[in-house]
Image (tube, rainbow, N blue to C red; front, side, top):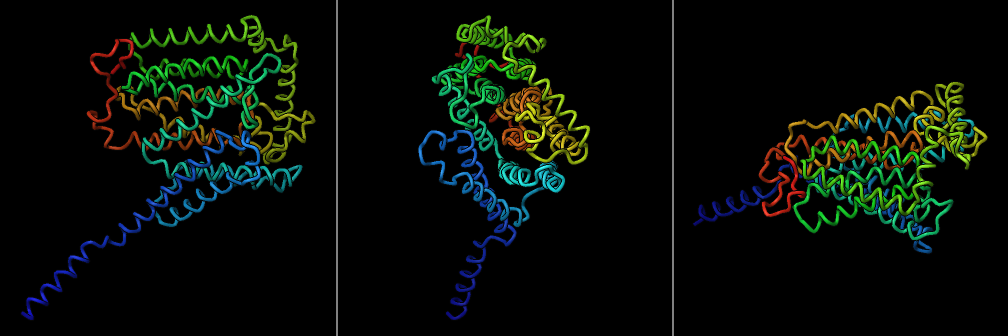
Length: 440
């Protein structure tokens, strides 16, 4: 009886020990929880950044919601980094180096206080971008972020459609995306997101929904009458045509949707007004409003400041103060070079290069949801690098968030589970109309 009791006690202790996870598994579980909290912080920050509820709800602007959500992402990120389960990708190093260079240029800035304020604001972008890189580790998480960004831009544009137009152009609702050129570029970036959702879903109702969203997005871009947006959307459409490998029937449907969008957009804007404005892209002297001539003068001044301040620039955010135009450069690349010197623009170009490298896809790869998302990001980035020639986006969240998306897409596409075609293949039921079928 004594031996039996001792044996039972020993068995209970061994059973209890077997239910205790090893220390390394416990640490990994805690790091995973921290990454989940980091992702929640990124989600909340993106909701606030893109939907801009403070612009529409009175009194909400005084509540530091963005700082609170950013703090959640930052604290969770730090804990995850301390857990040792986070890999420092090259993109994290480049974004951090870029921010470090911004800070390094402050002592040489023509207005140090203004540059310091710019760097403090950009630090939020740094935190969210890095947090997104390390926490977006699944296709579901990536798609969720892309859909939030997409719906936010559509909502801002639709609300802007209901507002009075200024000089015939549609402005976005709120403050963050009120400028029609800013709105147009953001819509160009999300357009391939919508197309990817359309092509990758098997649900007929959702296909009709995303077709309507694609149609509306193109029309809304036209209503902004943005010249940069016009060039960017052309690049996006060409990139989608090449990258999505559409079947013959799908190409016909895509051409029909595009034709309807063009006709609707021109009907709302007016063909003469729209083409007259687009004509000034190649003939800026014919712009009666003078904006094209002003942009040319600003471009020349930004190049002049780049040459005269090649190493440190005039300081982050200081082109407006120094140039005498009281306008930003309206060119991301010369904004980098004139405000942060050649090192700043070199780091940014390296970041863009890494992004496109992440989004390379095998031409013979089977079409999965991850495949469509990756190609959509490539098309969106193609539109961005063109639109960036006409807008100052150096301190925006969007381009750095796209970098984070590209890292997630690269990691997802390299997962062995994606080779399980039976679960991931984007196919269509046999009884579906031919123009809805996706080419394999």
